[in-house]
Length: 276
Image (tube, rainbow, N blue to C red; front, side):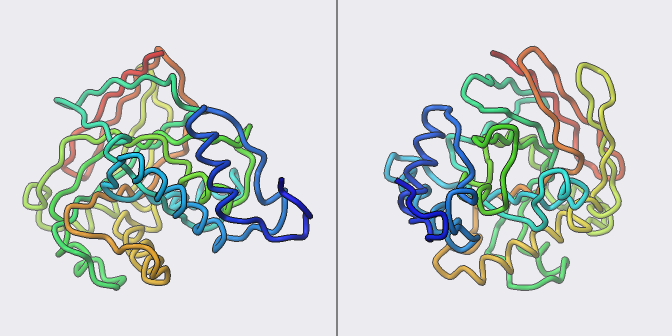
């Protein structure tokens, strides 16, 4: 099916294999070990998976940015950010700072505490955080649940792109308008800290600086990357974007309760109860 190891893999064939693994909670051998498969081919395959999802009735509600935390690059052997889509069916809205999630459909899931933005306007192609902030409607704290259909989380960057950026779901806390976050939101997003607890035991402490210097830096990276991918739509009004993990990513299992506490940024913490 996959042919010569030296031959370029067909993105459409890759896309159907990825979608089958996602739909059946199956596993994949990394495509980068099967033949020539680079990031351009991986994004082409991911676009095909996206088209198939839309044909099934899924609605894209935004993007996830992955591998923005340089502290985890060596662990996963991925050394630059990537992105994927978030859909209505992969978005879970917390109520009063709490959410429940069944892990039955996820493969080797991990939890990532993140900062999420909601857009009122398409942002300009710029690295200026003030100009990016002008198009943002609200900011929230959330968790992305990521998963790997590649056993043991062993892959290359192109493999992660093809597998929808490893996106499982996004648990979204209560959005807060910019006006509620103080006068210097740019500095707060850079310097705030977050404590991550599992079953009331502190597992990690992260910072806005961990995400390409700031979650706004992660947004600037995505904006520039999408500008180089004209076949993909830019961020649009109403879109949400989650910007990458502020701490290490942690394995999760049913029965656990994860929660966060943020300092230096006026966003509430979020409690997530994991079920079978």
